[in-house]
Structure formats: C-alpha cells, structure tokens
Length: 86
Image (cartoon, rainbow, N blue to C red; front, top):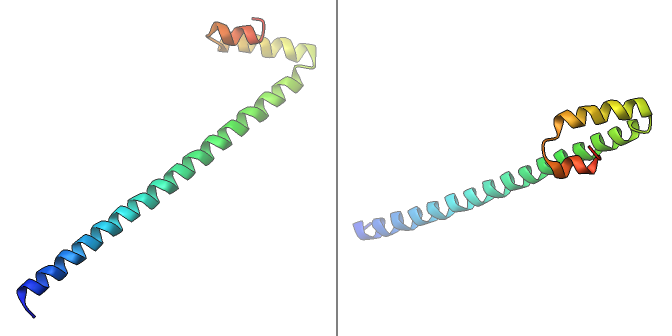
C-alpha cells in the first residue's frame, strides 16, 4: 500500500471518530436533559402533594394556626405572605 493511501484512510477514520464522539456527546446531553426534566417533574409533584396535605390539615383550626405560624416564620417575601394573609 502507498503511504498516501494509508494517510487518506487514517484521515477518514479520524473524521469518523470525530463524528462518533459528537454523536456520543449528543446522546449524553439528551439523557442528561431528560433526567433533569424528570427530576423537576418529581420535585413539582412532591410540592403539590405536600401543599395538598397542608391544605387538608388546615381544615382543623388548631392545625391551621400552627401551619400559618410556621409559614409566617418561613416566608420572607411580601407577595408570598399576602397569599396567606400574613
């Protein structure tokens, strides 16, 4: 085989390797994005369920006062406090 022919084959293989590495990066990026989205969905779901539980507990007047007292200490922004008339 000629050296030029081998050099061309090496160049082709290097280009193919470069393409495969780019494909791998794209796959990894998609998987990471999908995992991140799933974690965000699960976090949102947890917050909704905890909020639902708190609202249910607030039907009892004693629990309501206790929860609102805890919220009063926890919340720092006025717009959040207004939601609970604090």
